[in-house]
Image (cartoon, rainbow, N blue to C red; front, side):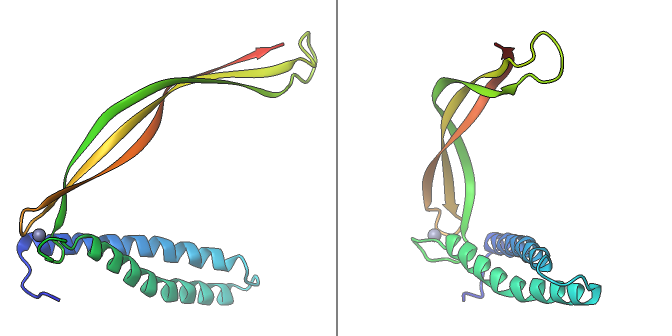
Length: 164
Ligand SMILES: [Zn+2]
């Protein structure tokens, strides 16, 4: 590995390390807690296994995530490690589609004039689609590349109940 990293590369390397630690700590703790549900109700055994599972999960996961993130941040043009930086994100509006649906959510219970009627839920919202373009730049050779992805989001949700 290249030992003469520029300051910009060093800071990207730090953030890659930080993200790898953070994600793998979350995954390892999750697996640690999950494994405890299979253990007998003995506190010593539980704590021992929890620590063991967390520690044994952490290192391989950390290694894997670190490898993945550091290969993502290697420039394809000049091959400098830890050189790719996210510099811009553009959100482009594509379409807004009105949606609605009617759900049967059960019968009116208890006492009163409406007992036995069906409760219907009328929902409506707007489904907005966006195209997001992320721009990345290499801090060493200045090469830029873009990647695009789609997202959808719901806006203007309203729901009303009727009895019939
Ligand atoms: Zn480059």
